[in-house]
Image (cartoon, rainbow, N blue to C red; front, side, top):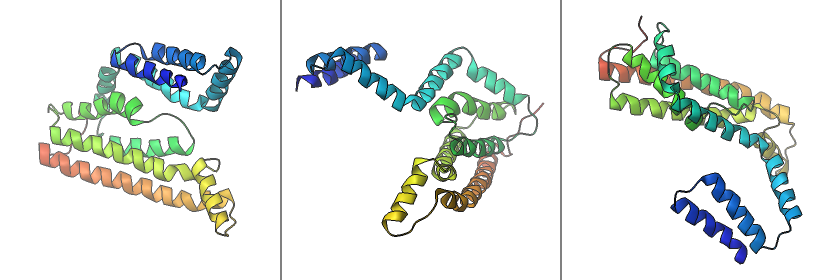
Length: 228
């Protein structure tokens, strides 16, 4: 029961808005002491947890790096870069990211998420296309762009996961089919999924361009493209 004091430390620490890393460190020590966990066993547990979840740490590192760059002008640099490209519409940019994101998911590349990539980098770029036309981005259009980015993120995650043989979702499908009497190889599942994922990726891109075109004409009277 005393080992739950570590949870109390976390609650109090975040309530007082203390440093998160320090809170977690102190709560770990408190839990170990109250739970009478020997130092060697504690270090072994932390080490095993670190090794088991090391790939997830890449995402955390990317988020920290992105936050640091954002504070030092990442948004402004992204918006300025996009203004230099000619003929790129807001819908085209979102569609290209959606296709790239699905490939990131397929090959297990831990970048392209909404908080680490879309919000600090792509949204300023997309808004920069509108501003390159001398217009202030309409709130309705901005919300629509956020929704379309979210749609691409979900489509990429849902359909892209099953295109990699070692992915947990593929193994889950294989084991589920085996339980009901269908023995299939993981590559069979991947071969079936690839055309489905490709079709979903294409339809999402077409849908994004169509919706963004309609929204741009509604808000600005024309499709927003980068200008000289």
